[in-house]
Length: 110
Length: 509
Ligand SMILES: Cc1cc2nc3c(=O)[nH]c(=O)nc-3n(C[C@H](O)[C@H](O)[C@H](O)COP(=O)(O)OP(=O)(O)OC[C@H]3O[C@@H](n4cnc5c(N)ncnc54)[C@H](O)[C@@H]3O)c2cc1C
Image (tube, rainbow over all chains, first blue to last red; front, top):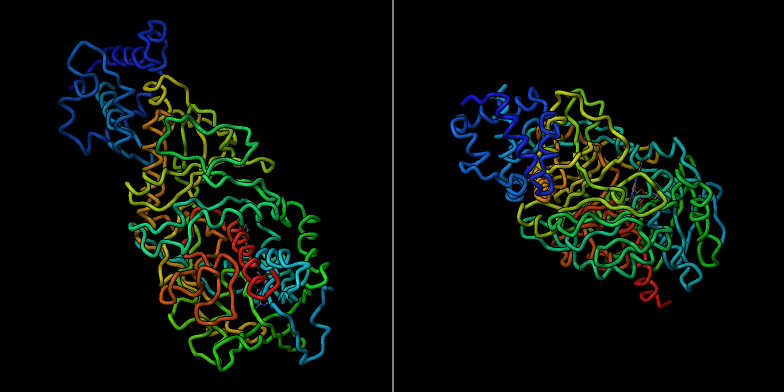
């Protein structure tokens, strides 16, 4: 699955707006916080995830952002994943599975 | 009573007292402080002088090796000589002073931790912890595991169900921190009428009588006279390694040594698993790191003048993960942000994206409980020291459960921090590198373990040798499990408890 960097960033900006303190804040949405996610480093994590979960690639976008137009509460999902240990460890860092999939999306867009 | 340099005593001198204490380290001295001005005549036989001395220190040397599954053996031959001090005050000359009480779970018999369980619980030690804090000039720690009164910062939000703030404070009574105050602490007992401190008086053997009790002790000064000491009761307070060495080396009446019929003396040696990875790590990005947006002032390990806290996993979480107790200690020293492109930078960016908060990167180290293992042990070497005593040798063994517990705890911290949106964890230590990444802890525990029954240990709940009615042991060698805090506050509390017992026992209460 290929995503353009632009559409990915749009999705991520949406994510920021949604998760940041729960406000659909257009100001935050325009804040380039997520654009600051270093695509190259995140891609390393994403590629490592895909290397052990190759079948994940096809449904990544849906897995992360859901099928509906309604924006998912990613912070709540990520926290829940950490709580139940649904984590991916890469070079020492513990990521939630959704974070790893986000990185996989970034790697595919890069 | 005076402090006597035993080197000036005549050969064959007989020292007599009601209570003979072997060793004037923190354990022996606190015992003496507690017995000062009582009706008990006390002799402290201290092998060292007033200050550390290179020749005497060599008596402590001996071979040592660390072993653990999947790791190459690590020879640490300087460890026995460098992780303790042979002088009045003992390792108190150099200790860091970091103190805290054990957690309630450290005393519990935990089905997922073999050989766990003390003969009593945390509550039993509360009054003794309070008195030990007074001796060591520490704030008193509440029994419920909360922070001492006056702690200026609050623990992380109530929502952090899986994490607990475990309190710590630094004692100023260390030769390294306040030498004058430490000297006063060492000298004070001898100002009491009933206490006599003998310096350079190395105990070389406990001799038993026909009833299996200690009859007398043999003593030697380096290049000096030989003497004996007799008492109604004896306390071994020679440190976590030397207590075992002396019992094993006292093998004239019993080949297995004193108090060793059930073969526990010297066994179950435990330190703590202390691992930190630093900025100098050749693996570059491989540092233990917490990325968080929280105010962590309470968890700052550096200032000595106020209590602080370390993180521990909630007992239920420990049980769920099947791990031992483990602490996470932070350093709030400013740390350069991870380099662009480094994984740490991505983790921080992702955290910011998900949680909408800016995180900072901090170093931390983990200190984990070591499981008691009969094969982790002090034995006698074939080599002898300058007093003709067999040297101690250490085979320090870790098991797979120690590695699993360490990794499981790191995972538990990652779950707890991530699960509450508090931060992200990097724990880069590969199991095959644990031994090389470890700083061998100077906490010597378990070699004369306390047990409810003689078949399971060396001393009973009163710290009296199961087999030898007039012999007691003081110090961290009696800990059945290492628990998860630096040991000295607990060994001091146990010494005070022992002092109360001895006063009753000797009719001086
Ligand atoms: C560098 C360092 C830092 C530490 N930091 C901390 C810390 O921050 N917090 C903490 O809780 N703990 C710390 N510790 C451990 C702490 O110092 C010990 O737990 C404590 O001092 C032990 O006291 P003790 O009296 O049981 O034993 P020791 O201090 O070993 O005292 C034993 C005494 O017995 C004497 N002796 C030994 N053999 C004989 C013999 N055969 N005859 C006569 N006398 C003998 C010795 O000379 C000594 O005086 C540290 C240790 C070191 C080395």
